[in-house]
Length: 456
Image 1 (tube, rainbow, N blue to C red):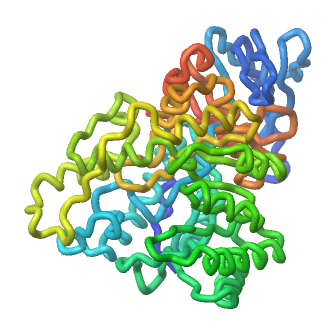
Image 2 (cartoon, rainbow, N blue to C red):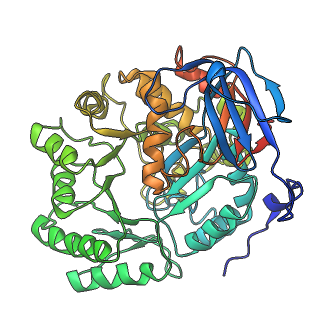
């Protein structure tokens, strides 16, 4: 059992939680509402919140405001659903020392010390999501303590709702993988793959995550047999499968084997009609994660450039670690500092996103936060900017990170859109996000389950 401070529980005082206390209603009036249903925005709209839930939403002339409701005038503001980052890793800090398989700095900071630091800072990390307008996240794989983290987050007021996967079931095992509670496990046979799935089933994962990496000399047919067994075993327990497969060939293999979610863009070559048809046949979810490589490039090439929102909301202790690289002699880094090449003017992933979005594939904007240079919380807003540069409209970007991302969580009946009966998870913005997606950063307040949080 991990020892995590429940500071976030103490940061917010609750109201009257007695079972016999009547739920008060609040009507937010005058704002323009983007409900993420795909419908046009509602001008001069009303959202009525009673307790933790939305009681009504719609145009002012069609919503009956309950007698005695508190009225809050939001004229000139915008309301969107609470955002969801559907690909994060809480066992990674976003700092310099968090991926020894990429850059081995264990001599400077032992990996065990890094993990202890991450656990101790978890309440602060969770709070940064709320400050970023993010009321839900999906941890796409990590050590078994992920399941305890989920319980802590879901019982902490100032934290997003959390869905999780356990250890990544992989085709490749990095030599730096932690031994005590590994984040990555590698089966060598279909039988071992099934056994690893069953070990997670006991903890009730929201997803099973596969890490499909093909190294030079790997036998793809053998990988297919092992990964197919893991997928089949997961499905036998009613658990969906998310797969890291950034090559077109392995992504196709994952889809043929029954994968439900691709957690990254295909980056090696243009997608083809066969791939598009595989995605659309079962309405597969396709995540973007356009910015994660940029994060590595920014830190490892020592060219850090953060926007104002990242400077305000990003964890300053994490950001401070990036500057340590300039102080470490290269001879003290096994293998040296990896150099991330300059990307092409228009990366393949961007073209693929344009093609797939146009074809009607269900897109989810997500970040892979926790990797070096990808900050927990504000990274989603940088991802939005990259999606827009790839050609997506602001409305579709918002839907991707609300309605579509709720489906990754498996909670689309409860969150993701603003409609009657769903949790009152919403963000009040100071400016029009449909005119400029950067306006999702102009957060006035975040509401989760009917409770407001000031981003400051």
